[in-house]
Image (cartoon, rainbow, N blue to C red):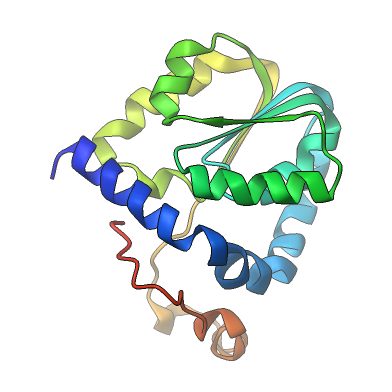
Length: 187
């Protein structure tokens, strides 16, 4: 499968799931994410600009935008950006700009430097052959003393989990939720 076909399927997927994404993905993981990011939060600088690549519905913009004079969220899905706008407006985050573009196009057009570049749950949507070029382009946009924040879901052997974690996961509402529309995830 070529990159253009994969990206087209990925865009279709996100257009279908956008209105339910927060209910299925973000809300059920809010507690765990708050614990995870509470350790990371002190490392996030105050600064001039934040770039949120693959911003989706904007939950990371909501978390960090107030630390910056301006924040830019980039996503290829208009439907995901519409949800992000709702969240940003609800929190009165007027320092945020949402850009509908694929990441490579955005990085080609923008030469701005960012104090925080955030990619949470985004890189796994790319074809592996896209990663090196993207990471190089992002590194050229990072301000001196800037911070990259990357977090990705990983596959693991469930048998390798401590019993306490396996028990917690089995009880998680996130394991029982699905999208109401049949949306085939190309990843």
